[in-house]
Amino acid sequence: MTDSDWKSVAGIYRQGIETGNATFEMLVPEWEHWNASHLKSCRIVAEMEGVIIGWAALSPVSARSVYAGIAEVSVYVSNEFKGRKIGFQLLERLISESESCGIWTLQASIFPENTASLRIHSLLGFREMGYRERIAKMKGVWRNTILMERRSRICGND
Image (cartoon, rainbow, N blue to C red; front, side, top):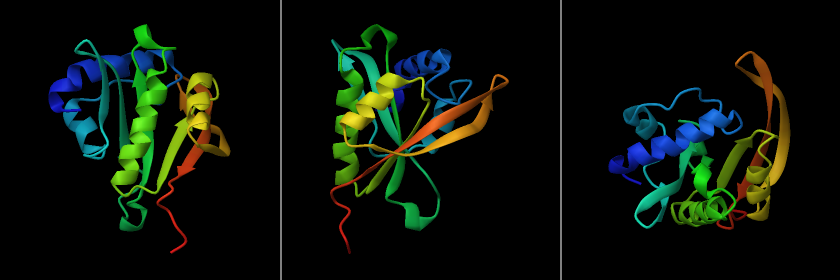
């Protein structure tokens, strides 16, 4: 993913925001803000016939150096291409790239209503770590999330 992809990426992100079940974001951020809040590596777009149909990226969970190997997952697929395993392929590739970059833990905070995302994460080795009840209020409604985590094979016992 490059800055020239942002218009397409932002459009897909907007679709996710509009569902109300993909993110706590209410508006698509400007590129500069999004770019600064995501890791420079592990940014992926899925294309079909030269058109971006999905994207995935990682955000750091903390600025503390001891957490440098932990990142939060974002995966979004264009409404037109849902149900075609694009999200699965993006997450699978994101896992592979994250491991090659030394990331040892991936986290995802998923709304319980987003059953497709929960299923994809489970299929790719994420496990439920907790249920966060009333974690945030969105449009006046308390929302819950399921915290999922995947530990990398590169994470040994050293």
